[in-house]
Length: 268
Image (tube, rainbow, N blue to C red; front, top):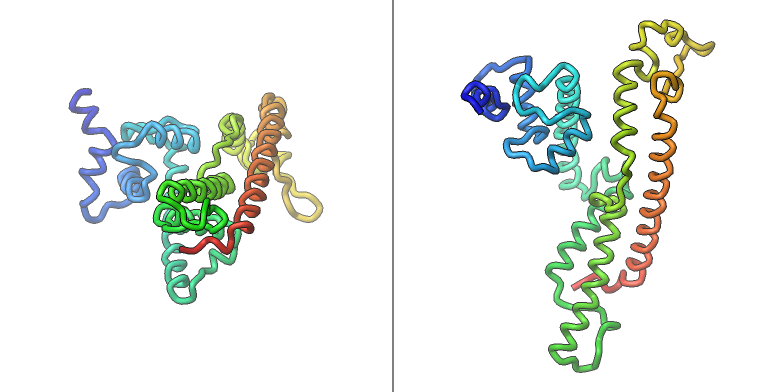
């Protein structure tokens, strides 16, 4: 890599401008915001790069010039979301400190429960000292028996933690192999046509309003000539999503069965 290439690397440019006062507009400020919110990283892992490319349908930018208009628009939108989330989290923290729960928790009690239960059980699994009496091997267990009983209890806790992860506390191990091609077609459709046909200037008939004054929302399936593979990809994506939903539902049912069985034992 020559010196000019090195000067143009995102990290180098970021380090040059991040402490300068009065930075406004353009790519410079966008880079600063992306580093601040971890949208871009100084030393991104392969997994981080792959995730970035999947979400943005664009190669991970190594140089300032790699941030074209389309990618810049996506990055700015991500920054806006991150900034709004930052403000929301401050509000959430104040509410939880004051009353023990937040509006966000009320809006998604299921999500709140899974995330909290996952964190608590992981901590409990790491630090607990005892185990349920049902795991006692004798009235006066030896050290070996005590270790065996504790190991059995840990197996139950590990299973509950795993199920919570699959339910939504982390990344489900069952993934949809058609997610990327499905997202690519939809992203391309939004760029070329728009959800309401607003970008298809050569098809003014799409902009007509219906009798109620509204406008029809389109999908790639409305344009089989432009997106001939969409129907097949969508059907495969949808079928796989249903399998994942069923798997997660099965995980939820198994978790609450264990949670109910050992509910009175979750203390130390």
